[in-house]
Amino acid sequence: MKLSSPDTRWAFTSVIAAAIKYGPTRVNRIASDLDIPVETCRYYLKKFHEAGFRFLPVVDYRAIGLSPHMVFVRFSRQINESIRNTVVNWLDRVYTVYRASLQNSGEFFFQTVPPEDDKDNYIRLFEFLQDAGVFENCLVEEIVDGYYKPEWISMYSFDQTRWDRKMQLIVPTIPYSETNARTFFDKLDLAILEELELNPRIKMKEISKNCNVSPQLISYHREKHVEAGRLVTGYVPVRQTHHEDVKYMLVSLPNSTNEFYEDFLHSVSISRKRALVRLHMPPWLEPAEKAEMHIINPYEVRRYAVPVELQLEIGWTGVAEFIAEAEKMLKTIRV
Image 1 (tube, rainbow, N blue to C red):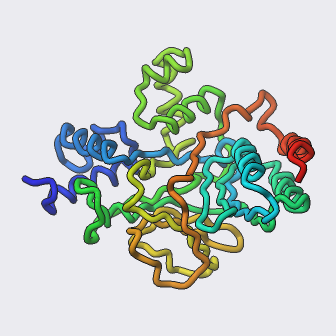
Image 2 (image 1 turned 180 degrees about the vertical axis):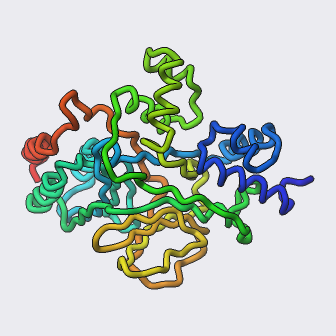
């Protein structure tokens, strides 16, 4: 049977959909659910990664005391490229988990996770940078709800690495948070989270070696604390290489709308004022509905793991510390 045949394409994409729910290492569970051989699952997952894709764990940040935010910034015109890069690289350290350059020069989008009890200071940080003349404009909003639902996988032929007709397939929905409440965690849990974000296919023994902890303890924490729906809510497929055939877009819509461009949907982030829809779609297509749209430059995207380095014995590092850093930085770069 050729890989391009409909039955094989359905099986391939069904394996990807099951891995969204269970994770890319739960091959036996995936095979059992789909009633296909384990080796077939392994083959498809291997082809998936060879085509430049990977799975990223969806971390339940609220469970560890962090609050997801969306941030748009437009740098002031008088800020030169060198200063802009300095500020952007510094912001990457301030609870940023995702950063993308937008189509318009000097505009950036950040997904960030400041401490739940320090949200007001986080907003003040960006107000300070705007008042200082670094930003022409900025928007900082807490994400109060959201989910990943990568419907685009039903439009993509993974065996041929190209867009195709839509398949009838149930794509799992991965919530940003399971409980919206803080749960118990420790530094080992955070270390395991970081390892999974850097390499979702990592083996228990490798994590054990990296963390200098017994494999048995790693296995217990990973299965009971991290991947039992407490700190990871699912796994989302993303494209890591060969970006030419995919356009990434952010569409800002009023919260009241029900139109989320379902065929190419990747995720929905909901604040109190808007729904921010992220799309993965063919470069030749345009969304039909007119809305505030932002095209992401795929070559200037940065993803960061859970900020383990900011977790202290007494809690997460306070944002006031970063405001003080910003004041010193601006004196150095002379904005």
